[in-house]
Length: 566
Image 1 (cartoon, rainbow, N blue to C red):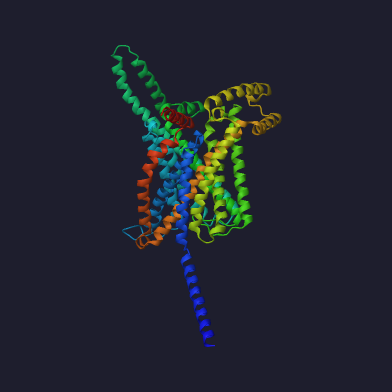
Image 2 (tube, rainbow, N blue to C red):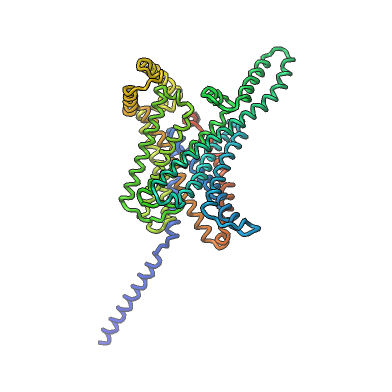
C-alpha cells in the first residue's frame, strides 16, 4: 500500500511539473501588440520595397513613369501635411492660447480657427504665386514643376483645414443639406480666390514687362549706332512685345487672354494654374467624401480620427456605391472634355480648360478618397480597436494594391491603343482632331450650329454623337484608364500620411519630454523631416517624376544597348 501511494505521489508530481512547464512555454509564446506591430512592419516594408524596386525597373516606360509619379505624390502629400499642420498648430495651440508674453491669452474657438485657416489658405496662395514668379526663368531645372506639385498639395490641405473646420460648426454638421451648401460655398470661394490669384499674376507679369521695357530702351539706342547685323530688329520686336504686355491692364477679351497665355514669358503662370486645379479638386473631393459618409452614418466624421470603429457590411457597400458613382462622374466629365475637343467646341471653351481639369480632378480624387476609407473600414474587422496598426496596414495594402492596379490598367490601356498612338501622343492627337473637326464643321454648316442656332434636333444629335463616341472610341477609353492611373498616386499619399500622423501622435504622447511640450515637439519633428525628406524628394524624385514616358523609353534603349555592347 505504501509503495502504491509513493508511486501515485511521484506520478502526480510529474504531472504538475509538466503542467508548470507547459504554462511557462505558453507564457513565453505570448506576443504583445508592440512586438506584433514591429514584426508585421519589418516584413511588410521589405516586401513593399522589393515590389517598388521591380516596378521602377519594369520593362515598360509607362509603368516606370507612373510609379515615380506615385512616389513623388506620396512624399509631396506628406511634406504638405507636415508643413501645413505644423504652422496651424503653432498658431492655434501655442501662440494664440499661451499666456502673455509667450502668447495672446486667447480662448481658441471655432471662430479663431476659421480666421487662422482662412489666413493660412490665402497666405499659401500668395506664396505660391510669388515663388513661381521668382522661379520663372529656371524652367529647365524642374523647380517650377516641383513647386506646382507641392504647392498644389499644401494649398489644398490648407483649404481642407479651413473648410473642414467650417464643416464641423453647428451650422453645417447636423444637416446633410447644409453640408451640400458648404460644397457650393467652397466652390464659389475657391473660384473667387483663383480669379484674384490670376489678377495678381497678370499684374506681376505686366510689371516685369515694364521693367524689361526700360532696359530694352537703352539697348535699342546702342544697337541703332551699330551696323545692321540683325540685332536691331530683334530688339525692336522685343520692345513691341513688352509694349503690348505693359499697356494691357488685364485680359478684357478672349483674344487678349489667348495672347497673354501664348506669351512665353507668362508660361510660369500656367504651371501655377495647374497647381490650383489640383488644389481646388482635392478640397472639393474631401468635402464630397465627407458628405458621402454623412449619408451613410448620419453624422459628420471629424477631419482626424473616426469614432465608428466597426462599420457594418451595409455601410461598406454604400461607400462602395459612392466610389463607383464618383468614378462614373469622372469618366463622364473626361468624355465630355474630349468630346468638346474632338467636335471643335473647345474653340469656344478655351478659357474653361482649367475648369474642365478641376472637375475631372475633383471626381477622380473623390473616388480615391472613398476607396481609401473603404479599405480602412474593411481592415478594421481584423484589427478591432488597434487604430494605429489598422492605419499602417491600410497604407501598406493600399501601396501594393495601387502598384498592381497600375500594371493591370496600363496593360489594358495598351491593349486598346498602343502608347505611340494614344491620346497622350501629341502628333496623333492633333491629326485626329483635324480630321474629325473638318467633318464636324461640314455638319455644323448644314445644321446651322456654326451660327449659334440651337434646336432640339441639333441638341439630340449632339447627345447621340457624344454617347456614340463614348461607347465606340478606343482612344476615349484608353485616356480614361490613364486618368484613373494618375489619380491612384493620391491614394498612397493619403494613406501613408494618416499612418505617419498616427505614429507621430504616438511618439509625442509616449515620451515624457515631448508629452509636456507637444506643440514644440511636433514642430521640431516637422522641421527635421522637412530638412531630410524635402531635399531628397527635390533632387532625386522630382527629376524622374517629370520625365515623359518617351524619356524612359530612350533611357531603356540606351541601357539595353550598353548591356549588349558588353
